[in-house]
Length: 268
Image 1 (tube, rainbow, N blue to C red):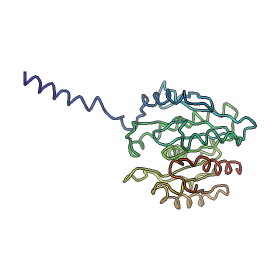
Image 2: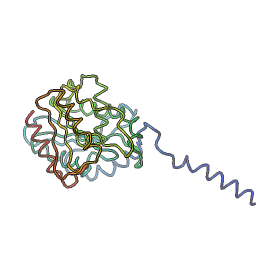
Image 3: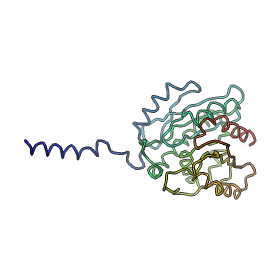
Image 4: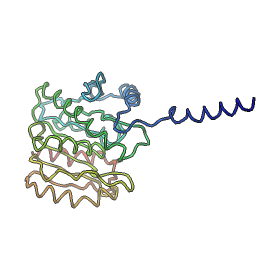
């Protein structure tokens, strides 16, 4: 009897790692994403929830929220949220996707690939290429709607994914988008340095680099580097903007984020 109990206990211990296994490196947690979509969809009051095909995961459709201006449309802004969030996230994303339409800019907020909640920057790095098909699905959707002036806005980890996509286009990104907005660029986890440099210097399109004055140290430390690259690209419309008092998530500073973004968009 005692021997049986010991064997049973050992078998249970062996099974624990597989039962609670982490998401495989570089693989999207589709189950978590579907749960998030089900929860978020019912909470969307502004805009239309749509589902686009994910070219990196056969048969999977990811959620997006499309919101159109009431009057003439100047163009569209595709919004990429930060790590582990969703296209209706209250900080950063929601203020932009709901207020920019009032300034004549259609918004398309995309669900980006997610992993388990505890995943860090290094865990996400192999996942970055899987964001590319989603970005391009968003661009294709807007083009089919007759939109030609398309701007890409990316926050935090969404910025890493956007940068990976931009690098993959090898200098031809200007054929797909007319401008890029990066918010909270360069955020990683403690002791984890960025794997790839910012490709700002090689961009032909206009770039807006925006961050809060109370940002994460890594974002603040790399701000001069990002500005130098923007200046090197020599696009007269490109600039860097600091939002006073804002943290990495622009918590309670949504209006203060939207205004400089909208003003810059209107200047293009």
